[in-house]
Image (cartoon, rainbow, N blue to C red; front, side, top):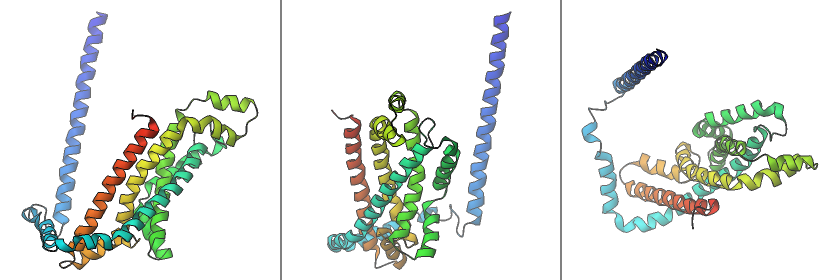
Length: 280
């Protein structure tokens, strides 16, 4: 009797779970189509009305670029300084964000925090840094400081601090506390406990996450150029806004961005694998 009761309860709960899952899936589907219909009705054109012209603009860009292909190497060289500026923005922002994120992660990890009562404060600070998009921060800073690479660097560094701080704190929570407790028992200071007890355990993961973030920040730096934050994104906005006659420039910029992101992705993957000891 007891076994039969357990079986009937299990079947009932299974049916309820399937029912709830089906209702949730139906609600999500309705929300998706409802949102798409609302966006399409408010659009100047209409998604389905313009679907047959989806590839007209790429074809026009590539067609003009192909007709001017002889000048492509010169254009690639011409926009190389802007690309270097974009990579520099991402590199400096990643470095600053990693340093700030490292400190925030240590201050917000239970068992490692220098000021345990301030853990909620530092965690909420990281939440705020991650919640505000880089482009919003950059727009505010451009209004205050003027257009240029500095607002982009600060905006990306703020967002990177929150993102890496969260990742670093999760790494810290998984570290072995025995070395830290041993150092504390012999009178080591907080900084000594972090340097000798924590960093040897987590530095590889720190480095891996920082490299991954560097890849993301290159893309973010290029996007921020569209709002006047310098770099190759600013040149891309100008060429696209100009329209016909500058599509070969836009193609060259797209190629530089694509090749740079692929190269950085491959190099950082190799470095991460070597740091983490995955390569033989």
